[in-house]
Image (cartoon, rainbow, N blue to C red; front, side):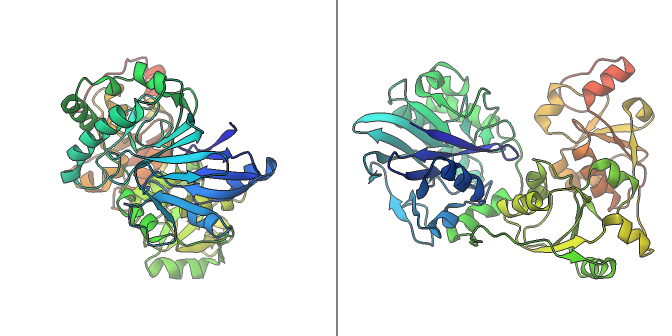
Length: 456
């Protein structure tokens, strides 16, 4: 079988293009931008005839409707309540793919309507597309709907794994959707080593999957669930109702003069400064949110900015505008009002005020209180002695409780710390510095070891 993964490194997801052997292709859990799939299909001389969804995604906008607009049939759970045309499937239903067969397996847990798909040649399983029901060394979390559903879904997931997936032949290839370490959908870390695994490998590895009973599995799974981006709370409904179809032609960023840009700011638009953090530190618009354009851009945009907000951008000349637009759209941001034409140089030429932030080496921040804005698991694994901790995603909620005096913000490299500094700056904090590098860089520069455990 020719099964090609299409990986979104920023979200930690993999979707799949499957050659059906007759000039047609199946895509599984496609992202919103159809171009990577169409390009891969074109190279193989294929056209996409089917788009299969394992569940209502909370972490990205589905691209199935883009393929439907090109003639593909959408396959999805009949329990999902989709408000657009699709072929609804229930447990055991089969779809004739023209020689091959796709069988739906009800595997609730990550979501109530979750399906896995078994690709069959006759009775021989060729592949299992498990979505979030079975990852490499882990499973997807069950706490993304409501607290009341978290434990029942965890128990349902144990039964799905044991009774529906682990009964498949050990050599069955497994292709999960939530794939890489960047995903916030996984319950605990996902194993490395590619985008696929097998049923036998998952039976043999992964502490969570070795839980002796449902009670232990549910307890251990729920203990791994940390925070997750706020946009997860709204994208299931976007995908259920059906996202806007762009026909492969996403909007362009409109260039805005400095005065028009300022007028939009005064009207409530959110300024996203996507330039490298060094450029942001050297001069930026008051109130701008620093989110450097990189693979993780969409995650932090979705975590920190309301989904209905009109967005305006500050960019450097050489940055990829198309990438920025794709990242906004894939997490549901539709109101892209434009970018500052000429960047900060135009802002300065118009005589408009700007702010600056300090960017320092680790040894230069010795007299400040260190504020670590990484995820809790990162902090507890190793952090600077006496550092205080506040995850970037929750910083606005705890900002008023931070100690007074100089703060040296840091993360793993500097990008999240600069985002945190921009959040605090617009709340009125002025005694801020962003540390280049992470805890290991600090340890090397000052010759002191890091510590483990929770913050003081």
